[in-house]
Image (cartoon, rainbow, N blue to C red; front, side):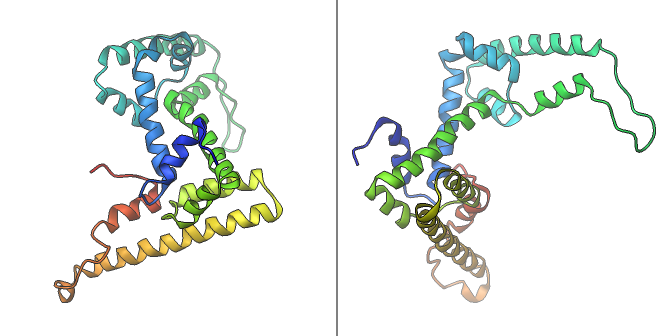
Length: 239
């Protein structure tokens, strides 16, 4: 199948020698999202309106701080804090409901609801979620339409557990019958065979700490620990 613009990131990730190409997609997307928000985009009205409302999670604010565009980050946080202060001041002046008795139902509190929403909102997380869902759809599209991609999918190094679940869930929403069965068979085989491969590598890594194996070859186990972390926690460790 002729490569199209929207399939390029997916094809590039699946051609990468890694334990989970979907993790590669996600990591690249996170970097691109940080670049996007810390570049000139932070001055655009639609971006600024959303960052004013949502702010950023602690994980991404650390990455943004390390980006070294301190002026851009300060401007975004300044207008976000002004918006937050205004909302909290208005909500804090409203009457607060209370509950009496151990088993009585607690009344809702708008300020607490807003604070909970604020604690769990992040512009970059929201942006990544929107784009990542499209990536999952593109993976299924490539699997269905491209024989070469389907072969790479089958012969690759599998997936981490979280992205195995994402692919399974996406496929069940998109397909049914024999098409779904065929995909799940390939997905299950790619996942399980490669999880077992890495599990065996990790076992030999631990066995190498036994003095009786001191002179034995490492085989494929030298990097078994970071590869296992990718498989179990979908986390690519920095070198």
